[in-house]
Amino acid sequence: MLRKFNRHARQSRFTGSTAEEWTIWRDHTRKLLRDLLGLDKMELCPLTPVRGEKELLPGGITREYWRVQVEPEVWMPFYLLIPADAGAGTIPFLCPPGHQGAGKYTVAGVDRYGAVAEKIQFYSYDYGLQLARLGYVALCPDCRGFGERRESLEDTRDPAAALKGDCYWLAHMGEPLGIPVAGMLTWDLMRAADFLRQDERWAYDKLGCLGFSGGGMQTLWLAALDERITCAVISGYLYGYRDSLLLLNRNCSCNYVPRLWEHVDMGDIASLIAPQPLLIQSCREDRLNGPRGLQNVEEQVQIVREAYERLGAPEKLLHEVSEGPHRWHGEHLAENLRTLLRS
Image 1 (cartoon, rainbow, N blue to C red):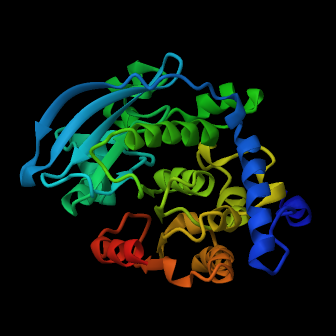
Image 2 (tube, rainbow, N blue to C red):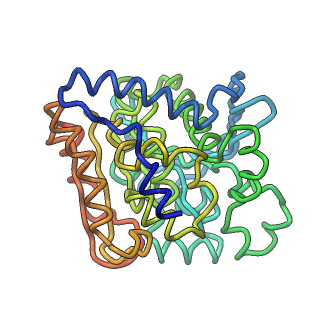
């Protein structure tokens, strides 16, 4: 398989030299990736938003519970975190969850459940709440197979099982129809963006997306394909496919898109975000970097960096490397977002 990867991978990478050639490549590649994700098979419907309970958190943050219809009879629950002084100029962020966190609960800082509280502490997983404390609106969804969207609700009776997701089962249903899990997740975030864009309380000119681990994967795909995302933060998910998903081939099914590797690597996908502001976070000892460690990361970041330089916007790309294993780092988030959002 390694020989086949070396022989057939990344045949659709950018091979030109000018910004004009890159723009043509970008448009073609976005169409290619939308086809590989099966987005043409997803079904549009009214969002029909339903708001549930509200609770007031320390610092004046309001946490609202919502449900929207992302496809006919397919509902996505989420928490909407609203700072006390939020208004027309407030920038909203989509905050998709990763694995081992019970979906929206960790990201939104719902720490009243012991297993969730442990994961918040272990991964610094409440980045939606962290954003709200910095003055941003944060939409923290349950992606398919997680939280309230588990395929078997019986799994939620066991705390350890409830933290995990059902990507394996979703892949078995979707991939034979040409819809990998990444396509389902990307579509749902697009519908969440629809919800935020029609809410008159928030800014219309800017919309962010921030995610860690599997949430970083979702941020990567959404920001690459949806031009409404004007700032992206990808944490714990930017490395080469060969090392991190072929050699480490027991990763979650949501990472695998049929025929993707023939065409592009992860850096090629991330380069489609250019010239929008982008922060990439890596951890030096993250096992997902693969056996070559940060070298596998840097190779992909360089692909992204070249796109930003080609478009005359190198200052809009930040790469932050932290010590330690797989973990979200919000220590410099306020400063990094100020830098990116004014660039």
